[in-house]
Image (cartoon, rainbow over all chains, first blue to last red; front, side, top):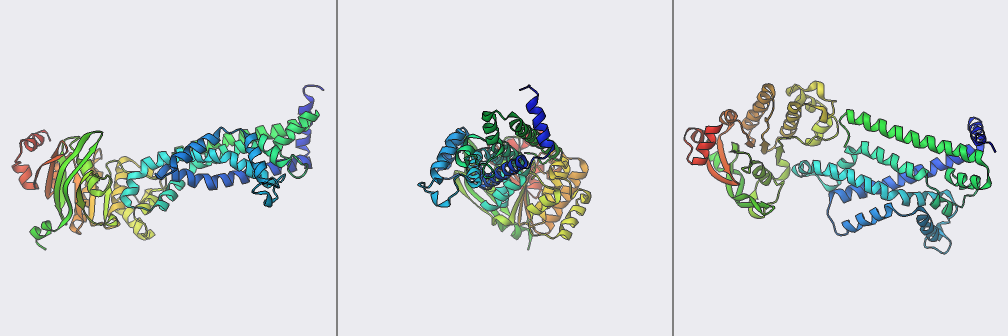
Length: 235
Length: 228
């Protein structure tokens, strides 16, 4: 095969909006966006809590979430597999080899990122705002709400970082999703499969989409940071 | 109520308050009584403990020993030397400082401060004078019984200083007790009724303002007044 052939096939598939290709892209986006939403919904309050309050077990949670940052995706996939397989404690959910299990695995993978990054942002803000909060005598809940609202720009950047990590994940989702055609096949798992079959055209097409998404995420992140820094809303 | 009776009714009382940090005594056995409805000025060189004293009286720091009594939390406010500005518009920041105010009242305070064109400006983009005025009106709008002001006019232009001093005088007339620090002797002479003079974390002299400026009792106060 000529060096440029996969590129030619890739562009023709993308330009023709190949239905199978579009389905894979749609499913990938859906799973990763769901995982990011779940990880932010859990991670942001936890990050704010860790940054603004001292309580027993706080240090243990910080160490655990920092450790999970470097957890290999295949290990996460294995753990989720054991949990949701028929004999596992979550076997009753019947989500193994479905997009739900894949979203769960991605959530577990990006949750430590959302906790660690948001904790850093909230710690900076809390240090800056602390005397005002004490002076006004505001409640803990209002403190967390204020921190989350005022960190909104940084949180968009954190969400983009989480999305970048989730969309490019392959090890965990191939274990719990099974890479089943029309059911649980996403961009990264398809690239792995098609490359092993020698079908480099479709693999390259999805590679181009993934790279484009990475580029968009970075451009958006830079644009948002620059825009809000100018408006004095950055952290 | 006569001036004498007013001063005898305390708004803040501190008894044998000491605060230590990094094995240094930063507030040393402070006892004081601040009269209701007065303007009390805390004077002293840099590092004398003025800001720390205000922070302790307002409850921002917890002294290791001693007792402080004052109004409940929502009846006392503090304006910091460098305002803590949230990442939101000036209007939203003002509403954060005094929640529950309607839009018309909010806008009237901004007009009073000649900042009605700055309602939508991000608070952190305001100038030093504007942000200090915003912090002050945010504190005053909730009509506190007690207001702590930590060098509220430091590094500000004449117009901002005049506005802030007018607001302090008006708040005082409507019954707010004010405790403030300043390095500006002329300002202290214009505003203060009572003086607390500090050195090295201790109160070395308390007096009514006229007596303090005309005939200070301690050598430390005499030296201080010669410098300012």
